[in-house]
Length: 395
Image 1: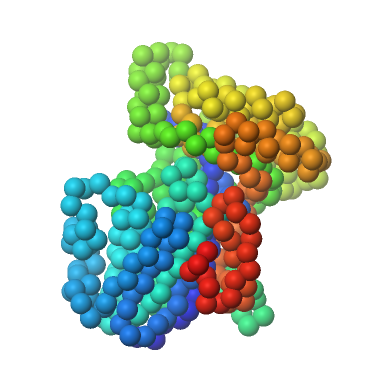
Image 2: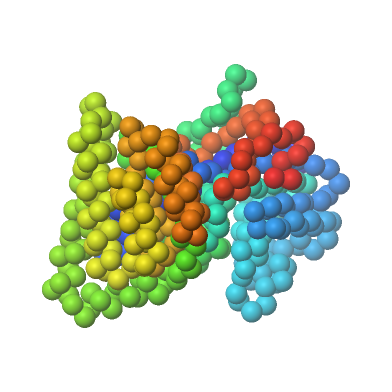
């Protein structure tokens, strides 16, 4: 089978407002991060299939003349056996491998399986609640669909980067959701939707609505490196609501109003000149939402430290995702100087956190021209490095 070489990328995600409240029928706003995962798919010869995932220290190779071609792509159980999962618990490498094999076999169907080398590298830390698995699944879906001819290659000869049409994005998203199901079991679909469309999405009662226009906002993204369990945190909020319904119901209503107000402010910022009042409103919403999340029981001393350290520099922060540790975001105003940013980053690193500057609201999945391989990226926290076309697997 003749397949195309493809280079694609997809962003991670943050929850701007609505953590946990969305479980109870309230509005949540999810936004793309300009920290991305990159996937290079190259057609090869010799009947081999290779997957290189340097971020999780994984390199695998299979001979397509052996048992892989006999697997039924619809039977995840047999794929788990093939990968060597026996106890039902998958580590990060096994989940990534299982998701790749499922999409690879499903997209190419029962016909001839092409020889491929797939290399993936990412600016996103894994297991931090930033949608790294969804970015990976979106990249896989886009690259495999494009390589197989199921969707077009949107690049023109003069393009460095291009995006697919709405219909093809919907197909990418549907396949990426299947990859997320392999990894997470019962995902909401928000993460892969952000990875596909980018920008910002409104999530309410299971319905995901991409917002047509959003401003690009500078932020600091901080990983407290405090591990947390989303399942435990969701259960904690539910228990508090059951115990104090008359107290917690207004809190959830207020979080819903915060999400809606934030959406309104961001919409204004795309239709009229941006002013300091817009940023004042966003900062106040950050503060109010963070207080509500503490009331809901999903705060953590490390997140309190993050808010205190950034506020000392005049910056406003809140957690993103499940809470209980994990990551937080800090809003940067246009006039915030690089000296203030650098000092804040250093203070946060002195607390034992990882911190880096990025932005939110950027594009979703993209195809890149091969010349893009001249520059690629180390995992998050590293520096940009120059690469030759055949060196992408060494990142």
